[in-house]
Length: 188
Image: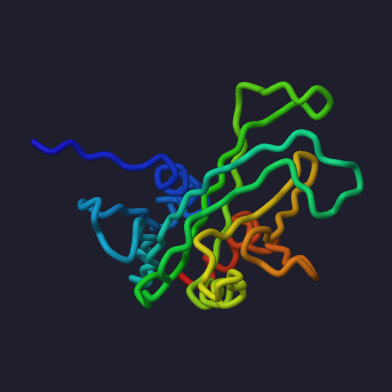
């Protein structure tokens, strides 16, 4: 007998979607029965108009840097790196990037028991633009990784690895809390 499981990033995002798109509003969040399902990890369904959005979830590795210089605008406490992936799929409506990171005391940098989460949301065309903006390596090939940087005491998030650093590309507008409105418009 097969046991069914779901990766934590998908589980967390499904929970967030259920909070903002509740069952009482005739919304449903579904997962495919096959873990090898192509093109999407979650489905958001609106029972009122029978519209459905496909969601693909990507999760990052997060690295911590505690000794950043005050006023240095190119150094961050957290660096989230993702493997570059092929975005040739027209079946995915939204890409969610799940970034989990340890919380630290701002003065002593001692770790806390809780962790923080940032979720970036990109629609299909935004993800195309993101990959188009990733600069090539010195050899001319596309970088194997791309990443984001952010600080303990700042809600903003910036493109780091793979992105042009002048001017820095800000992705704060792609945070889940801000993109909920776009998701609601897409499924209404």
